[in-house]
Image (cartoon, rainbow, N blue to C red; front, side):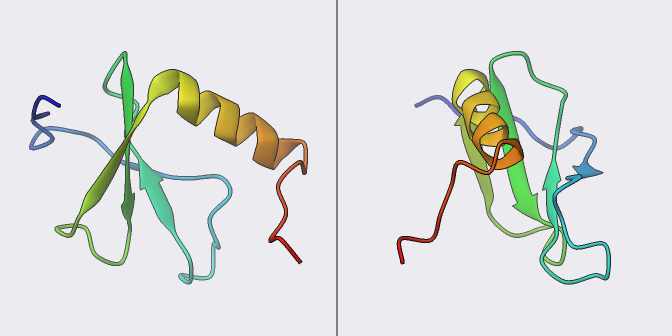
Length: 71
């Protein structure tokens, strides 16, 4: 996989994050084919990079309550 330069990426807090400062995800919309995701509490930490189509499928599943914790 090729490297992606995230140094100039702009980040926004995911609408599904905890607004009380708890479990907060930030995403960048600056790229056409991928969606970088990071923990807002560790902005210089690791970043997960998802294919844009896969991220869209995941967000749709969350929005439609189609995910469960396996219990």
